[in-house]
Image (cartoon, rainbow, N blue to C red; front, side, top):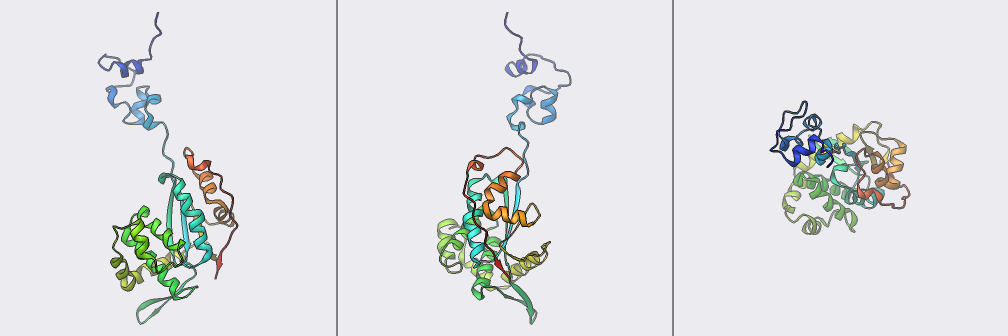
Length: 254
């Protein structure tokens, strides 16, 4: 005698049969449309889309300045490589180029003084305008990586756009840098940086899931990939199997 099939499986295999399940008043093709229906119809194990609830991404915010060697090293060796290795749902990144700069209002207009001189202010503003123009992180982050990994973070915008984002207009970004919009974007980054709690003492200043501690900073700079994989509450992606050697910590102080 053949073994009896579970009612849920029988209904899935032969939906034309009038199989009644207690509490299940839905046709078989709707059983995986929500977790509640799947439970009522005893079909959870057959609904792959409901088997792994989505975990929130790890939030990583980087407060930096464009010409700080330690910032460039962290972005190139840690942040960008971690972003490449992990699926997009694992980590959200926020970039705030400003760092140890200072602002003051002169004649009703904001002016900025940067730790590594006027070239750094220009680099910060180019990246702020690039982010505003591109909007999409996956579009502008490779361009910023290209600029930061080159010999000049201020003179290679057009070359990096040609490689990573040819759809963007370099002229519009330049107009932003030279106009009031660029100033407004830098002022906003100044406000975001000044609002940090605790106040930043150096850059790169790394905030993870809304928090900054010495321990998180140390872990992020030594191996951001390892830290994000430890904090992510969902199913660990394949990229978490990578075992990159920890990096020594470096910063640019005030």
